[in-house]
Length: 64
Image (cartoon, rainbow, N blue to C red; front, top):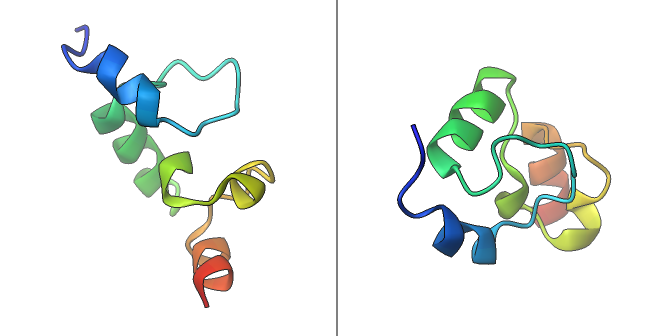
């Protein structure tokens, strides 16, 4: 199913992982990352996002 807000979501999406099939599909992205004990790219500043470490621990480290 196509997301009706995908174009709008893409303006906010910080994901730099080019082959990502979930870009702009926030519900799918959040579900995927939380299932892996991670947060999506939009939860991180750009420098931290580029490490592709999206773990809860990295999030705490960044915002500590």
